[in-house]
Structure formats: C-alpha cells, structure tokens
Image (cartoon, rainbow, N blue to C red; front, side, top):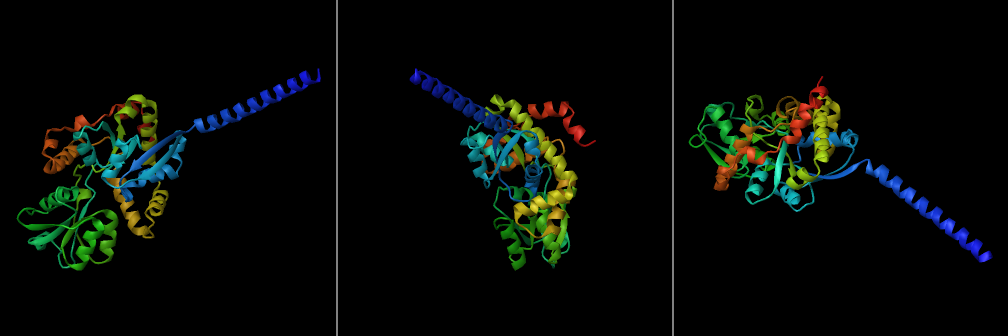
Length: 338
C-alpha cells in the first residue's frame, strides 16, 4: 500500500515536472518565437550602409518581429556567403549579383539602396578647373571597376575625353587614392562625400559633384536567394517593409543616423559624417527602394568589360520586385512619408 502511495506521489511529481518543463519551454519558444532570427550580410563600410545600421539601432527590425543578425563581409565575399547558405538576405554590390548569376547562382535583386552616382571629383590644390585637369593623372581602384566607370562619366561631364585628355592609374581603394593625391602621384580622383568633407578642409578642390547630376547607377542592392524568396515570402515581405521604414527613419532622423554611422565607422569626424548623411538622405537613396533599370544596365556594361558574357543579360533577369510591388500597392511606404 505504502509503495503504491509513493509510486502515485512520484508519478504526479514527474507529471508536474514535465508540465513545468514544457510550460517553460513553450514560454521560451513563444517569447523567442515572436522574433524571427534572420542572418543579414552587407558588403560596404561607409555612410551608404548607415540606413541598415540605424534600422537596427532604432529597433525597427525588432518592431517588425526580427532578431536581425547583421554581419559584414567585404566585396565578393558577401555574395559567396549568401551562395554558401550562411545568409538568405544581403545588401551587396549589384555587380556581384551579375557575376554570380552568370555562374549559375540563384539569387535576385528585390530592392535597391543607392541608385545614383555617389562620387565627386577631387583635384590637387593647383588644379582648380576642368581645363587644368587635361593631361593629368586620375586614380581609380582597378580597370573594369565602378570607380573607372564613374571616373569616365565624370570626365565626360567636365567636357573632357577620358581616353585622350587624362591618364587613368590603378591605385587601389579610396584611402589609397587619397594618399596618392596628397603625395602628388595623381592630380585627381573620385571621392565619396565623407572623403570630400575632409578634402575641402585640407585645401583640395571639388571640380564636379556627380550626386547633383542625377546620374542613375545602381550602387547597392537588397538581394535574396531564390529559395528564401520562394519558401519564406512572408518573412521576406516583412524584412523589406522594415528596411523601407528604416530608410524613412534614416532620412528623417538626422542626429540618430549620424550617431549610428559614427559608431559603426568608429569615427569622431562628425562634420564629415553629417555632410555625407545629407547627401545620401537627400539625393542618393530612394524612399520606395525600387532599383534603377537604367542604373543596372550601366552595371551590366561595366561587368561585361571583364566578362563579355554579361553583355547578354538584362536587369529584368536579375530583378524580382514582386514583394516590393505588394508593399507599395498596400500604401505602407506612402503612409510613412505623410
């Protein structure tokens, strides 16, 4: 009898323990389940990525039920990480989407971030006009890169012939080009707004500001793998909505956006970041996140200089704007800007 009573007590204790364990587990699943963990990669460390950073810091991804894990991978590594399955979503260079698609990769551009030329032409202290740039040297990163494409366009805007009037030198990244300009190795270069603010302080000249010319060029894109787009459309739609709201926040919250950019860039040059924020917010980032067909055509032509097979591609082959169209038709983005 006593054994039966003990057995009954133990069995009930076990049931209570199991119930508490399941309840605790369900509670954990419920609280965690309210947030979708999403690994997101981005490939650029500059103010151009500030909308992503401030969306995270302002809690907008969390508002849209995401535990967004942002990771940085430079250049082509970001696209490779997506192909490897580490990230279903990324903010990466459209040129990398072209090259990986040529190799059979299954990813789509679902939205655009930068859709205009982000550069300005900075020249040596003794070069104050386009005429004085004739016969001089300009630095680019490498031949076939976006810096070469933009440099050629800028030189044409200045009324010069990029093949006859200047000499292009492969120098490296923007920091390397700036050092070459300061040392006198080159007399001109393209610079992003943050570097332009520094250049002005140091007495260099700004010959032309391409950000005011409205030249379409798809500099950054929101990319998703085709599998993610097919199998997790609701999640993809929520992420695009969150990003659109984050872009609105970036455009309308100056101080918070500058602070977020300064923190990620680990920079104390608030004036330079503030100037870059203004240029990006007012001129470079579209509110509705639609990529530019014309700007993407320019990217494809750029890639085709290195990989001729790219010439047969069209922007429409690389785009899947179905989620963005649904969000736009719902009026969500329009309501943000009212």
